[in-house]
Length: 509
Image 1: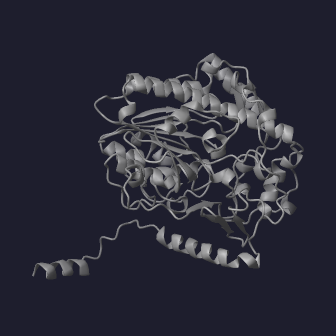
Image 2 (image 1 turned 45 degrees about the vertical axis):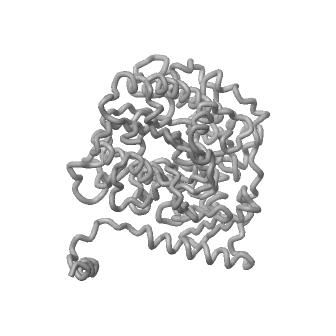
Image 3 (image 1 turned 60 degrees about the vertical axis):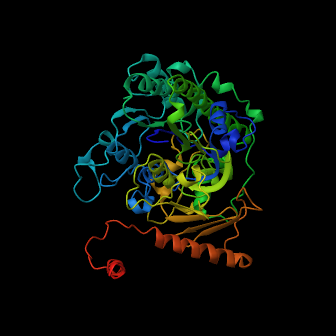
């Protein structure tokens, strides 16, 4: 297969366990299930930072957040970085973004990175030929002045945005809501904008199922809250204090099971809405004959704890509920297993898609291509572990620092804690194998989970002498990873004398 089209579908804040493909017992997503039947489900895929912009930025550069300096949410890609759509565009692809951005700067003059912005910069409207943006709620380019869409957006913002657990049933018609409008925008692109003489790369980026937790009927009542499973209870005993602060500052200590089930049911309804929308997109691609030459990747930027560990949304931590993301790849001609436990990081997206497109991977890319696996090459060597990063420099707040907090999960005086900069103070790194997870933090705190016997990460073994050898081995692997991921840029072009050149001369003599 040469010059394939590429469709990268990304949701926002969706943990893998929300899908039946990853074991969810109540939510069926037939469009994604049909896609997976012709492709592969990566069971162990992880974001590299559990927040929107660092995760998206590392994915689109193939480089870790700490390497590119995107160490906090709302920081965006340095225009000097080389990005996936930029490389594809330079190699003849028509590029498009349809949906949420939260990765690329729009204005070079507002760059906060040192140095001049180059002429060929990774800026939104330079790397994408076609731009149709959307925000959380229901605002989508091309429909912003539609009275019903504006009303749907205003209802969502007014009723479900300002408190930690705000949720509800949006009274709007589904066809006036953001998810449907993005699907329609994608179909319009395929029918009217796409250049048939070029392969396309499209980032179809849904702002849902991120907050605000709301969705119209029939999706709002599609899942009975009584049927929604709850995660095991976590006392947070022996866990880093930052997690107890998260628990309190989102008033999750005052949220009962009934509320969590209802919020989860709405969250699932938002995902079902996305799946139904994708069904229409895939049907249009079939009718246009595009499925035979289009690689499709479905993933999310990070997870949502959805009550697990007594937490909601995303936070400065490394539980699987924050970091384990869905990852489905449909590649025409793929004949490998439908499921695999090969470990994947989102930094792997860029080198994988470039190699599948026959485009050289830029020097400095830190991800690992999955293309050899997708081509069923026998010498493919999967990752032994994945590494995740989080947090800004500083000391994380303690419970003793809290002088005011929400009285209940619907207290609109306090926005969700993960939106506060203070919530992300305290750097950390996590290394995860299939059997173990070690989290180390700059202030000396740590977590070790025996995933084989404790898959829900309830019992912290860090500091237990019986597990000292496990900690030592994982710390060693993390040290070697840190050395290997040190930035190779800029490339050294200063030294001209090499033994390899001399060796070649000797062989010719």
